[in-house]
Image (cartoon, rainbow, N blue to C red):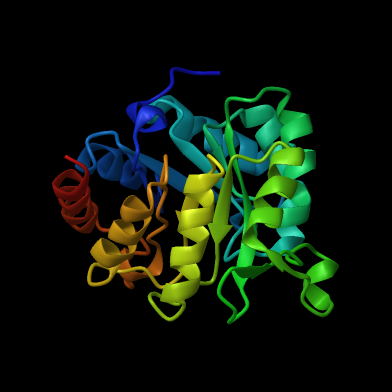
Length: 246
């Protein structure tokens, strides 16, 4: 595994999508290296093409690579695990049922592996049926504490709470954050986060006492014409992080 970047020790690290290697480099600099850059397996027709491209990213941003699914697509779960085995990235995105496979193929405990759980409309209760088959069935609603314990059993590092739709599930998010803090688990709020609601979402997680927070800010800071994440927006987000975390 390559050199561990600063974000790995941070309480807060941004997670944004990289539209190209240069875009990744620019965003990495904008956040003063306190960031991981998402590269989506869904954008590649084969494992080998994904691996070849991700190795280029790794070499330019100290392996601050987050291997992604692509809008939480459960059908990418196996590809994410296979690619991650070779890449050995610093961060892996997974659906709930894919966590064990990813951890086993990684063969080490250092890479952060998240597990996707979804809001249910009920405070303290999440849906863990986010896998390729389970996502097509009725929701599997369990207490957030149970979801965390199951993820720990599988070698997971963090809860990816998606889709949040910004602050639409604020009370549920607060309960998830409190559970993560109480159970020494990381938290990754995802979905509908933008420059306007980012501070509120981050503050909720900080107030709850979550040890490490990795907010995903995607489409809201991507230039529609170029498909690239705007480094100036990343810089603005990181200024908020610095102000809140100190």
